[in-house]
Length: 247
Image (cartoon, rainbow, N blue to C red):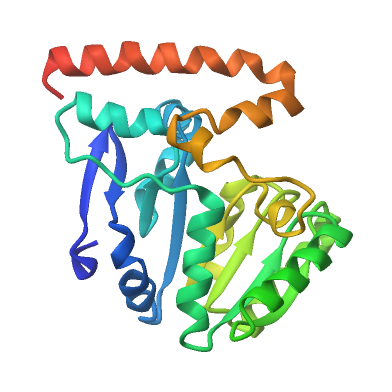
């Protein structure tokens, strides 16, 4: 973090970085340093999971960049009198990174989703960012014995950016579990990124995102996950105790 000169705050013991939008390209360029850089797009659910899961907490702590995607995290930072972080919509952030890479003629590898959706996503990425080279792709939900070949293919392709989506084992934890096997680059997991690129899922409207209601369309698709609403109340309880303790 020192080389980027970004401020990293803590919200309930979980790191969150302050990244103004006008510095995204600078940060992407700084990651061309021969090292591996994982970017974590942190939801409220992820933050609360990090508090109880050591592997997940270690993953976030070791990431080069941790950016909030939930409005509650921004409100939590404000409530704890921390510097207020900039919140990003995952798809829009990925677009900004791809745009920064295109201006330098960089490359991307796509991993995850289904064959049809991945093909459509690749086609749309190529048409939107013609200056970005797609140096490989592989679908998710692959047999376990195929994984070493996938890792070797990514390693040999040396993409500037590895985009990982639905279907990989361990989801976002797939990246830190395999990061030591790769060469330098940026590594980003985003759950439905390829689905949005393939236009099989729509992204939340700017108005819903601004109000912190971006989860509403997902809940309508998967109403059995309504139990997750209780995480908001649990988060508020943790914030209150942290404020009382002066943390």
